[in-house]
Image (cartoon, rainbow, N blue to C red; front, side, top):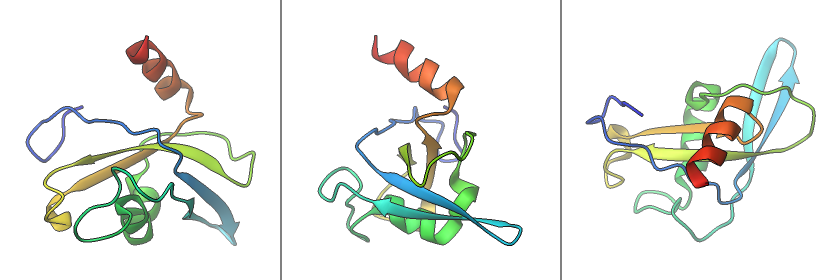
Length: 110
């Protein structure tokens, strides 16, 4: 995946992070409801970089699409940049149920 931070290949993590989407009037609100705790999401500046980016940027970090048909959905996420400076990083997340991403992930892991 070409990115604004050096064009490196994104490493996608499917480690159990789950988000909740809810509708409040005409606005979709996203929040992280489960972090598997210890893992690649823990960086020097925060306990969970996924939660940090979702709390800060919400749906702007989402690169996928899926029907909202459950209270929670598992996501994959990728962090690009130097995790010692989160201001210079990008984090993207995508629902595992996104058809195009699921097909790509399946082909990549086969």
